[in-house]
Length: 65
Ligand SMILES: [Zn+2]
Image 1 (cartoon, helix red, strand yellow):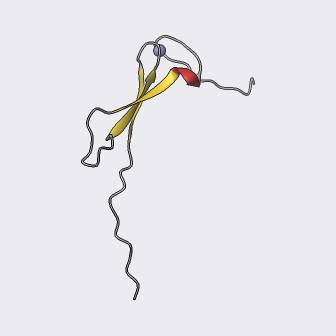
Image 2 (image 1 turned 180 degrees about the vertical axis):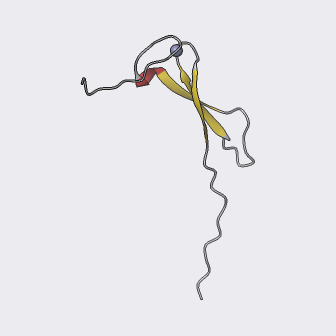
């Protein structure tokens, strides 16, 4: 057991988390926030996954009493 388990790109076999970068989507919500982020290999561009951004709807504070 090495103890350290670094991610390895299945496509170009580069090792290390620092080689995984995320890009924001081009499409944006009305508030200017990107809809999702794409995690991909910095070297070959292999896509690890797409993550939906959590968009917080504008919330009204609950009025007291
Ligand atoms: Zn790669």
